[in-house]
Image 1 (tube, one colour):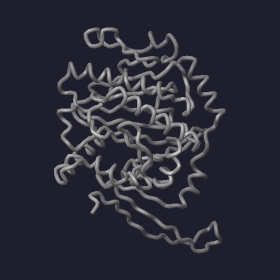
Image 2: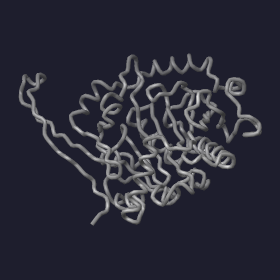
Image 3: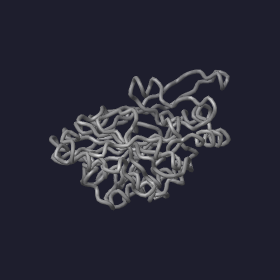
Image 4: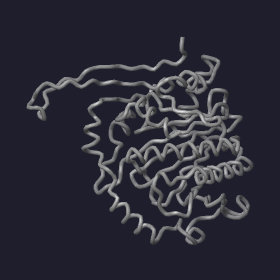
Amino acid sequence: MAKIAFERIQSEVRFLNPLRDFAEDLHPLEIRRDPLLGDVSIHNPYLKDKAKAFFGECDQDLIRRLVEESGKNCFFCGERVEQGTPRFTSDFVAEGRLRVGEAVLFPNLFSLGTHHPVICLCKAHFLQLSDFRPDMMADGLTAAQEFLKIVYQRDPSAAFTAVTANYLFPAGASLVHPHLQMLITPVPYSYHGRLIEAGNSYFHEHGSSYFTDLIEQEREGPRYVARRGRWDWLVPFSPIGNNEVMAVHDSVSDYGLLSGTDITDLAHGISRVLSFYETLGYLSFNYAAYSVRNHRAGKGFRCIFKIITRQNLYPNYRNDDYFLQKLLQTELIITLPEDLAMALKGHF
């Protein structure tokens, strides 16, 4: 018997539809529950029609104007990165900033954690999603790991790391220029903490890692995408965001212990997912890689990466997070995970 149960609750909604001269409409509704955390997501197949009406396509003229205007004073661009970004104290980072390829890592002006650097990813002020090359992504992710190792040497309380990205304004970015951030803290932030606690509880109950069992159970199923190196890529049964894709490392829980090949393979996967998102018509995204320092991880956790699309950019765009996500902490499924995984496979 499978250890992990994928729970679906199905119902029907009936109403008289004014768009069909008040004829009776019947909408099937499926509620999904995440097997580990119990998080709920909802799928109504007719919401695809609403998405077409309310989630507009990217306005390329608007994007072009935003890129041109924001580039004039962007302090991540060219030589302005030297004068316009903070530096670490010399006792912490001797050169003031870390550099890997084009990636430049420096302190955040407005920190949200004990250690909160920003990583300017590249010299280009704007990228289409297919322009996020694997080598470029690997440089940014490597800079993050180098900084994490410095923090580990200096701060024994630093235990929980999230390497994150917001791309463009619908994703919460304050700058157009491609960049990453990372948070290294003595306590895990809410969702990160729930993943760790639930993973360790599962290990104590079953004697195995939930994430390992998940991959074994999903590998031949409709939500599994591909394996590259030691990362397995899949689409979650009950996603926490639009078009969510995730990757799980097969054994390491600490981002600081990933090999160079692990980081290169992760970067390749991210690049493939972003190129896929572009074919769907998206431009804005968020992602996060979750890590626990080795001696604090327990046996139930693994390095996990999650990426989602955000609303497209056009005049007066509506936000894609509202009461359902923010106050009920329930996600809306526009595209079924199984359909998303099938479409994504070819990009790997």
